[in-house]
Image 1 (cartoon, rainbow, N blue to C red):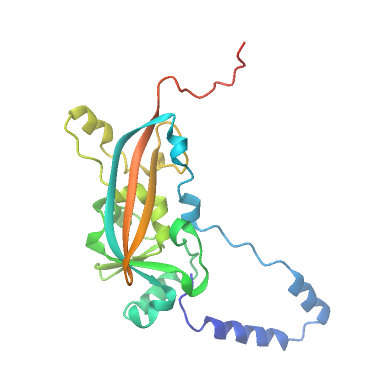
Image 2 (image 1 turned 180 degrees about the horizontal axis):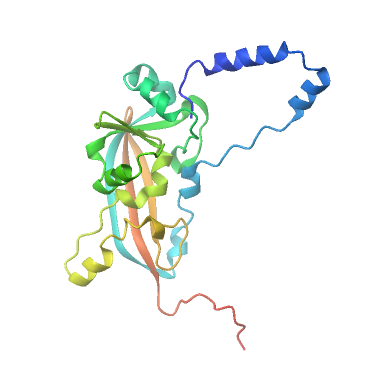
Length: 234
């Protein structure tokens, strides 16, 4: 992820230096024909939901809940002047880091990449705790313990943490759902018995304003719809 506006100038300078080097024409031609290195898949695309509603037919939902919150949304082209107060620190934080992706984890290269801004205290408690336990993470940039920036794709690997476990009127349901969204080891992008699934949607509510909704729930396979054990039927 690159925020520096001088990158095009640096690239042009490097190209000029290369053209004036003493390398042979054949070496230059070979280098020009070399394929560009494959870009890594954004982490947001890796962790976006791979399941559909049809995939949930053999399962029942448990502990379903959702959260809706608002954030400010900017394209990198808006950094100046809108985010000039935070721009120097953002450049340092994201230096040499792979962009985690915009919505659906897609990487809209260049200045079209999205960046979200939200008050630190407006994040759910579980997310704030996760940030404390992972001080070396490189996707969420905290400023003065008050404002936090992140690409939409940065949410996808930890989506269930944004959702509170649902309130319950019975002790059994309360016990079943306690901590269900905090266990990221049980979070999956595909429908399987016992896992937690999550999905995010968003809509623009004004200039540089976005409303985000995250759903999370656990699924359990319905009785009588067990997976095939691999044995041939007679």
